[in-house]
Image (cartoon, rainbow, N blue to C red; front, side, top):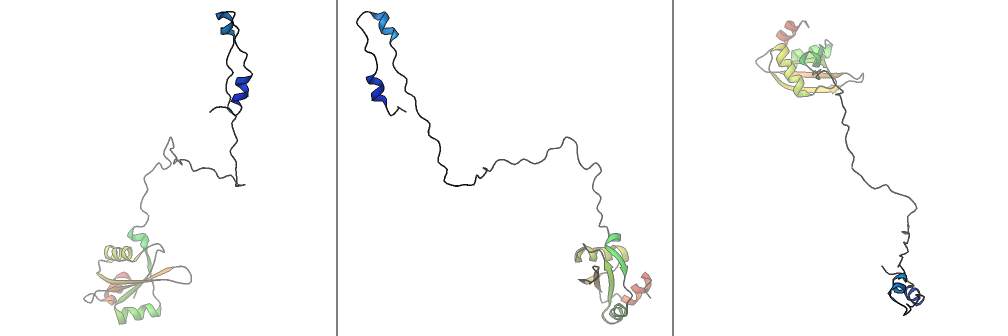
Length: 156
């Protein structure tokens, strides 16, 4: 990019004399220098540009032992409820009532009942009590009697 004042620079150049080639070599043309202009910033804040974010790459593993599944069927179902309303549900609607793990879902409760007590579950209703425990009402199949299973468990 040529400088702005190139005409002035060429006007000030010394004209070579006619003495010889040695004198002509001594005379040099002026170098054009560009003036670098600073970028104007219109925003006060400086925003750091987005750059590549790499994940951690540890030299040694953080977990030495493999993770063991903690929610097995013994941990899901804690204990049966023996309140009056639970006993009424056993007699009237063929339903058993249990306190279960707070993180267990209905499918896990159904599978745990099948593994622990060998019963066929039709439906599972859950609710979280005011004390923070999860209550599961397990509806049994029509050909299985909830009273017999309650006796087998040791409720009655």
